[in-house]
Amino acid sequence: MPAYIAYVAAKVTDAAHTTLRISCPTLESLEVVDKSVFGRNSTGVTLDGAEVVKATKNKRKNFMLSGSVADGGATSVIKCRLHERGEGWETRMERSIHPDEPHTLVERNVLQAPGEPDRIAVRYFTRMGEVIPPPSE
Image 1 (cartoon, rainbow, N blue to C red):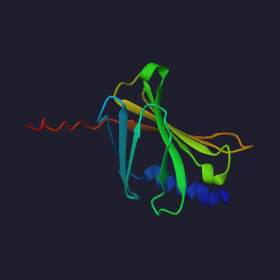
Image 2: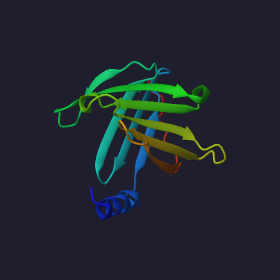
Image 3: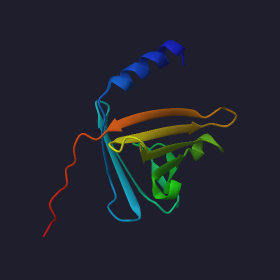
Image 4: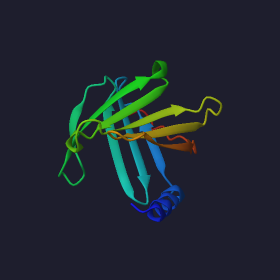
C-alpha cells in the first residue's frame, strides 16, 4: 500500500467517533461491542485461553479466537490467530485502564507477521458515562 493511502486512511480512522461497550456476561467471559461510522462489531470470548474457530463476516475465511487476562487480571487480551495466512500471523487486542487516569481505557492492538516487526496501534478511550440496566425480575 502506498504511504499516502495509509496516511489518509489513518487520518480518516482517527477522526471517526467510536463507541465501546465492554461487559462481562459471566466471570469467565468478555464481550466487546464497538460502533463507528464503519459499522458495528461484536466480539465475545471466554477468558480461559481456549481457541475457537470463528468465520469472517463474509463467511469466506476462518480464524482462531481466544481470550485471556494478563497483569494479574488488570488487562484483557483477545487473540485472533490468522491460521489461513500461514504460521505466525496473529493480532492481539489488549485493553486495560490507564494507571494514572482511571477514566481512560487503553487499547493496544498488535499485528504479528512472520519475519516482520510487530505493528502496534494504541488508542485511548475516555469514559463518557455508564448505563447500567435495571435488574430484570
